[in-house]
Length: 331
Image (cartoon, rainbow, N blue to C red; front, side):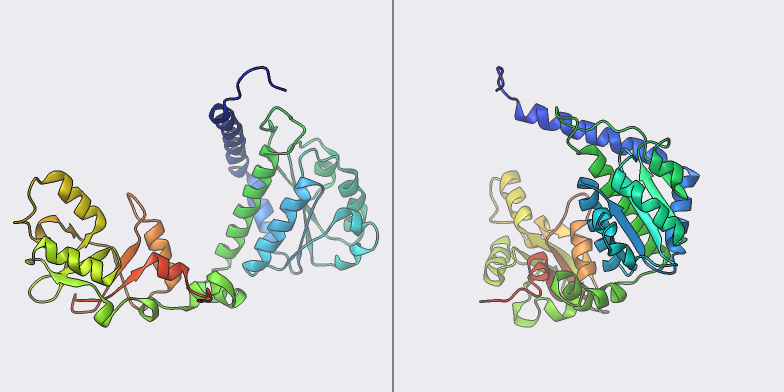
C-alpha cells in the first residue's frame, strides 16, 4: 500500500509523457528508408498480409489485421502457437508476414521463421532491437528504438503497444491511400453500421427542409429569431436577406453572447448579433463528409451545416445528431 497520497492527475500526466516520448522516437524511425521498404513490401503482396504477435502484441496484431481487411487489404491474424500446431497451413506463397515483437526474442515467433523461409514468404519485422533474433532473420526490419514502458511496473506493456498500434494505423492508411480507395469502395466493405450508412446516404436525404427549416430575415427582431429557434428545435436558425439569400445564422451561442454584451436587447435585430459566413455544404455531399466538416471545423467543432442552392438560398440544415442517428433503430 502507498504511504503517501496518490496524485491521480500527476500520475496520469507522467504516463502520458512517457507514451508521447515513445511516439517521438517512432517519428524518427518513420523518416528512414526502412519504413519505405516496409510499405513497398506490403503493397506488392500478391496474397495476404499475415500479421503475427505474442501476448499484448498479438492483440494489437489482430486489430491491425482487421483494419487492413476493413480497408480492402487482404490480411489475416496468425496466432503463433496455433500456427505451430496446424494453422501454418493458412500461409501460402505470395503472402507477406508482418511480425510485431518488442524484444524480438519471442520463442513462438522465432519458431515460425524457418517455416516462412521454406514457404518463401518474406517477413517484415517491427521490433525495438535490431540485434534481436527476429530482426536478424527478417527480410525487412523496422526498428522503432528502445522503449520505456509507462507506469511503475515496467514489465507491463504500455508504450510498446501504443507504438505498435500507431505503426499499424500508419501502414493501413498508407496502403489504402496508395490504392486510391474512395468512400464508395469503403461503404461497399461496410454495408452495415454507421460507416456504411454515412458513406452511402446523402445530406439532402436527412436535412431539415421545407416547414422544418428554421429561417428568418436579418431585419426581424431578436425575439422573433428566438421564437423561430425554439419552434424548429435545432438550436439555430438560418438568416436571409430580402432576396432570400443566406447571410448568416443565429445560434444559441450568439444569443448568450448578446445577453452578456448588451444591457438591453429590445432594439436589436437578428442581423446585429448573427454569425456571418456560416459553414455550408452541398445537398449531394455524403453524410460522412458532413460529419467530417463539422468535427474538423476550426477553431472549434460545430453541430450543424446549412445546405444552400445555386441561388444562394438555404435549402435545409443538417445537424450532427441526425447524422449520427443514421442506421439506429428508433423506438
